[in-house]
Length: 344
Image (cartoon, rainbow, N blue to C red; front, side, top):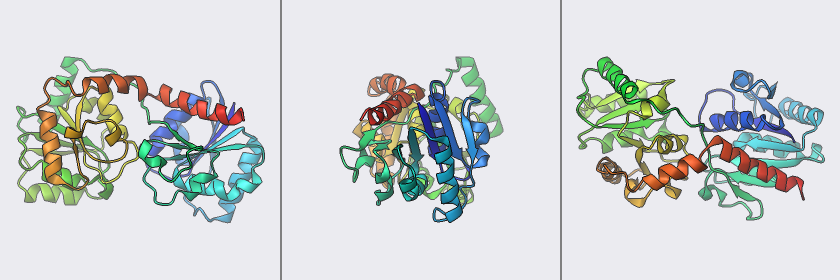
């Protein structure tokens, strides 16, 4: 099968980008896969993937961008064109009249009020059930995000990793349990809510990630006199290893599509607490969920997770995540969507 994937972001690596890298690389093992993406992502793909560099920093209304994209796809002559997220879907929608004899797939990765651009797709994949709202039933397909399994660290390696952090941040009490969040320090992740929820919880909070709100969040920690329990670890390339040191993993976001942090946590056998964002509400039991923006509710959810010593509520989820939330499963389900379109 000859497939073109379109990733129209122009810098940074978040859940959307990681999803695309994983999907494209896995698809390329058994298909001819072309990726049209910003040149900054050229090193993210396997040698089998055919990379086409396009400057997607330009506006989605840019005539030269639209012309270049249309010409590239016409030259490749794929059977499937798959647009990842909103901008890519809008661009493909505008050049659709010039793309004959090709099936279009679009993927919704986040909460969007207006999904009209996605409807150019002969099939529309949503990364959680909630995101299918507004999409015709005959087009809508749900394919959860998946990740590659992370090697399990030995007890000694986890202990050494924990000690290295505690040596770096001697203000922390090493006897306390560890609550961890991993994500960009941006408004949508609402880390300020998490800090507020942690005020009266006797545990350390490790915040992994960086972003524009770091200074204000550090000021909040100082103002609330939580410096002995909260630490900012910044961006870490070993975030998935760090996850294995946590006692509880927390999401405090205002919006999500299907958070990779949840996938990684469940695959690492970590109990969780979260706000009621898309994807998460389809997986976690209610007692570990809080209304969006509700600090007291999030505090209660975190306490429930910290007290879940036997992990009974989560054991079925750990097994399900290892079976369903993998790159292989995500890729096979996506291929099934392609095959169904081509068989019509």
